[in-house]
Image (cartoon, rainbow over the protein chains, first blue to last red):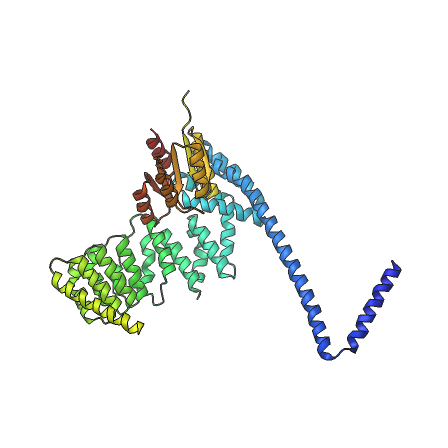
Length: 345
Length: 121
């Protein structure tokens, strides 16, 4: 052993002396190589540790899932004995809820099931959520500094119909500048209070983006008979994204009585609004839109938009305007030929 | 003694899948479950079920593809689709290609049982 250590010492001494005798450039290269080697080894160890940790966590989650999935299902679908099962299970969950992995896995089972079920079974899930005090953990998330954790808490409480327990935190959260967080709050209110929660749209000046529109529409579909008191304002709003949202509502809830406002949107400055308005007009076959479409066609210079408008005119009333449509179609075809010739040349 | 009716349930949410299996077995049916469209088609071919319950959004093959493939094999087994809110267009497509009934999530499980019983009568 001593001989071996002595040998290593000799090698290190040799390397050290040679290193000192080298030029600065070579020394820098050597240091870089050694640093790179150590960084590589450390990164490799971190990746291996992280992978093993994730694998272990996944295994644990699966184990917990196997235990609690059947217990939760038996408890909620237990018929007359459901209440007893719920009480026993809630006490059981209370004992393990301090363990993060247990808590998260159980919460995910309850919330996913609640999204798919209604009536008694959904009520039973809500009871488990409250009796096992998992709602307290969702409330705790609202106090977290990270907005994504706050959103998680809002989603859980809103899904489990516990939005009232959020009231203490709501005022503070509504002062947030994080638009994503505000939207999540509005969504939660929409689920809880229905169409009334859409009042914010009246004075909304920012971009109501497509993703949020889809989320709101999805939530609206879950409500029974939502009313849209202010839809006239939305259809005449100066905010194009609000016009688009209003048109989506008109299309989904067949609000054909709003045809005058829809026709007016054919003149909108925003291309997407004009396109969507034409789609709605065609869907409901609003023949009163003919003059507006005709005037839009005549004053428009964009080839593709002209095509769209002409096709709409053709669909709405071909019989009475056959000659006009055919002549214009020929003009457009010629225009297209000139365009392609110019591009090719 | 009459043979138990067979049902194939295709649903990717394991908790809902287990709940449906539990409730239908309680009602005396033989239940086979799949978490994706491909496995569902394998089960349908091997078990020859009397009823298929399929979610629309599933990995590998979605519900519409499953219905399409079943009907293209001249298999007329009744199919109940489970859809999410806002998937009305998908449901219409499903009816067009041969689905027999649909329920929108969140649904009442007893309603699904009643519909299944009515179809299996």
